[in-house]
Image (tube, rainbow, N blue to C red):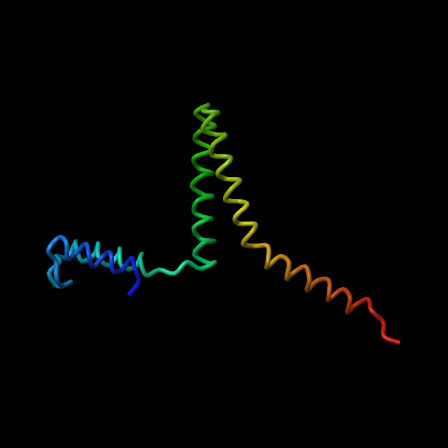
Length: 115
């Protein structure tokens, strides 16, 4: 059991809950959401999905800020967009590098003549 899971159990004990079955339906649903969050592993896929969601949300916010004439807010949102785009590029770089290397090797195969 990891540290965060122990903290969740410690909290339940603190509020007088000794067993999961003592929770009502709403509390059980909350407990399950918290447990799933605590046990979730961060993967490249989940990080990519998070970044995409942030980019979509920020794009919407930027449009609203521009429409409202709020230049300061637009600048701040643009900076955040650039940060998330940079993260997205860092994550994608190994795949791009592999593709470029594969293309280079493929071109070498096509252009190299063995004597």
